[in-house]
Image (cartoon, rainbow over the protein chains, first blue to last red):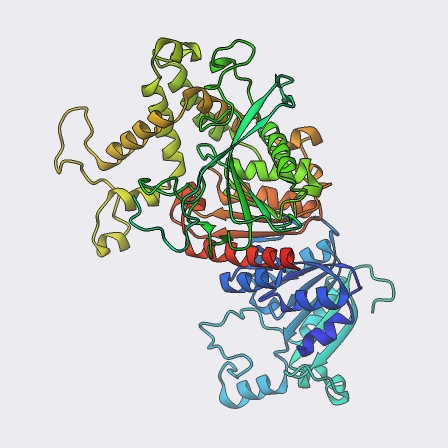
Amino acid sequence: MRADLEIIQKWIKPGSRVLDLGCGDGSLLAYLRDNKHTIGIGLEIDNQKIDACLHKGIDVIQQDLNKGLGNFETHSFDTVLLTQTLQAVHYPDLLVEEMLRIGKNCIVTFPNFGNWKSRAYIAFKGRMPVSDFMPYQWYDTPNIHFCTVRDFDDFCRAKNIDVITRTVVDNKHRDSAIIRAFPNLLSEIAIYHFARGHQGGK
Amino acid sequence: MPDFLPEDSVGIVSPQRFHFDEPLTLRSGKVIKTYDLMVETYGELNADKSNAILICPALSGDHHAAGYHSMDDKKPGWWDVCIGPGKPIDTNHFFVISLNNLGGCAGSTGPASINPDTGTWYGPDFPVVTVRDWVNSQARLADRLGIQQWAAVIGGSLGGMQVMRWSISYPERVRHAIMLAVAPKLSAQNIAFNEVARQSITGDPDFHAGRYRDHGVIPKKGLMLARMVGHITYLSDSAMREKFGKATQEIKEASLNLGRDLRAGKLSFGFDVDFQVESYLHYQGERFSETFDANSYLLMTKALDYFDPSVDYDGDLSKAFAKSDCRFLLVSYSTDWRFPPERTQEIVTALLKAGKQVSYLDIEADEGHDAFLLPVPRYMQAMTTYLNRVKQEVAS
């Protein structure tokens, strides 16, 4: 199983309705359907990935996240997911607001640009980081809104968003005490489970 | 004429006539006492009758959707690209049923049939039939064949509207509803084009208030005009440029091909046909006027105009879908300006609002509204993938 699925699935209630924004080949929704009996719908724009969803029997809507989610009703889903896509959308703040409107709770994962490797890359090479994990050059990258764990924490505070759980892991989605101790420096992927007006939210 | 039948053809097929004696009450309140439906089937119905797919025809589509009636046929059925062994609607696995709807003119009871009350042909007295009436008659056909639930009901354009009606009127009888190039109801522009078509027909001096047969004529000119204007709305601007303009690659790349090829290589400086596009429309209109009944055409356009399943639900289409129990696949085509992608998306939005399971594809295609009838690779691929899942469901 994909390591991020392992983490995310714990936060999904069995039998709940799940909307996956930028659902890729549908493997997350398929996993949740098979193990959590969720009713899921994915949004995707890539033809081949859409075909992969249909092949798995995953419902998918061909829709560009940058053109809004006005076709989805308020609170029509239990959980709205956005995995590894936040940094690639035109207006991350508006999209997160829409997620909060549509879902009772939301899960976002993103690459942490505050990781020491990114910092060291810029500090020592003086260039935008290119790695196996993020293999794009600055001019052709789909990732136009990189942020750090600290940035996202600030964002949640400013937007009055309750973080239910924050998990920080390395690029293999491994968790460790040392990463938890220095999340912004050591984690490569941040996984946030959040809502607005959540009881017991931080 | 096919010299030999392609391997992925359903081959030589023959239509069957189903007679129904139970009166059918129409949405208008009128009653058709007895009626016939012309039907073709492809593939084999499995033991538990779970592999049946209904093909709902569009405006001019009839029961002959796939294969050939004889080796002398110039063309196969109207949706042969999609139906056959190994094709998206795979007749190795599915039992496919296609029909000519009531009011049509290809053998099912319609204006050209004999009215049992008068002993003469119905003509303009044939009642206005609606999409709902068609679906009710199709349900009786399913009963006759012992099919309790369709594995899928599939249709494009006016056919897609029948699919929508199936999912609303008979929720327990549909597993998958596949709608292509469809809108939840017509726009004023759509109705306007239909009205031009109707006026062309009824204004033809040979129309004789619909009783043209009594005079031994058909309103050929009117029907031709109706088809010409219809045909324009089925094609996209880009499809017409491509079709009626031979251009070099450079011209195409610069989007300078306007499709203005001349028929005779020079201007006539008269009012006869100068351009290829005119000649093509004349040919299409002419051919259509020889095969299609004018009264049927009027009825089909009215069925389109009247379609709006939200009327029974305070104008809220999502409420219409409240009881629907099937999964939905909707497909739109980028250059379709008759039912553009936004119109199909209205249905998707209503389905999402109703909390239904829906997939939607917005296919890049140059062919306009007609794209749903054509082998656009991306669309064929998606249909194949989706229906492969249906196949697995049926098999398990």
